[in-house]
Length: 74
Image (cartoon, rainbow, N blue to C red; front, side, top):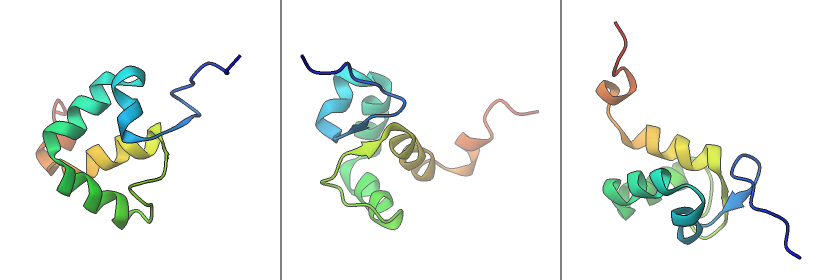
């Protein structure tokens, strides 16, 4: 029996994200593959290797503008 997927400590390929973390996948697809791949490479990873969820979220953050980072702050 396979162990359950753990979105916090597991590593996942992009094609696995829709069932594990749909909102992460949605953000990544909206950003576009070029922007996402660029950030993955800049972080020192290969786009073909499974990445930690924290890395996927970091990639999303790096693709957004400063306005997105500060949204909701006074």
